Image 1: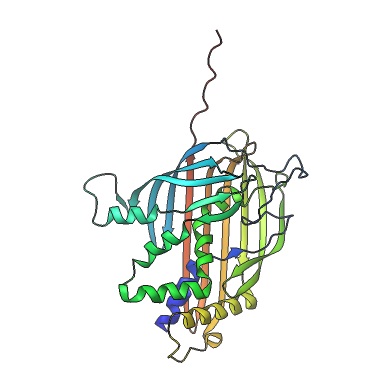
Image 2: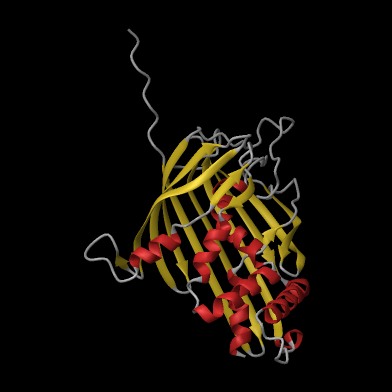
Length: 328
């Protein structure tokens, strides 16, 4: 039972990747062409200054623990078209209520900072949507080294066979989806919402999700800014079946072929995941002022319910616009 619960935690930690989108709801972060020239003039268009550097403060809540970090998000033009986004100057500020900027650093802080800040480069299209993640292999190697040496090859095999490498790419880039990717090309009047079905990609295959996007209207504190919300719900028998199939795949890939596999279909009674995002952004450039994303997952295995809650909050300190020089 303990192994089965560990599998459930692993799978709920790896959020599903969007596989396709409904154009009348919100674009998928993996769609390479959003907000084309034919899109309505009122549709949101990515127009960050290039190059851009913005300081981001990120606060997280995972597994009952809170942490805070600060880093720079750096956007630059990419040779051949599109952009690159890199994370720079990563600094852990707080962990479990401890202010890490004061006093002597706790043991392991340097290593933890290096690992947390090792975010691969995001490759973006000219429209600002995610095209690829570069440097994932190096990050995965760092993660493998966290396991005992005799377990590393087993972990490599498990991630490769179950498609978890693609899931890791999705997890790594989810912050951009909340900041910009989910909203590119959105054309939704203030006060309205739209709902549709959208496919999300699980390691065992696609599953349909109920998606709703809302335009809450102008933000009261930011001139020219709008508040947007996005919610995705995975629930019911199709999602439970997907979880069963994925857990069976991971069990097999984990080097347990010599063991009798559990009857996952019998053990997994229900599964549900609710993911949400919210952003306050400048409508002219899509530069975010604040963003939030959260995920609440529940799985019932036999008579035990496991709940995982993840929350991320971002605030952005954009540099003040340069003042035009005086004419002589």
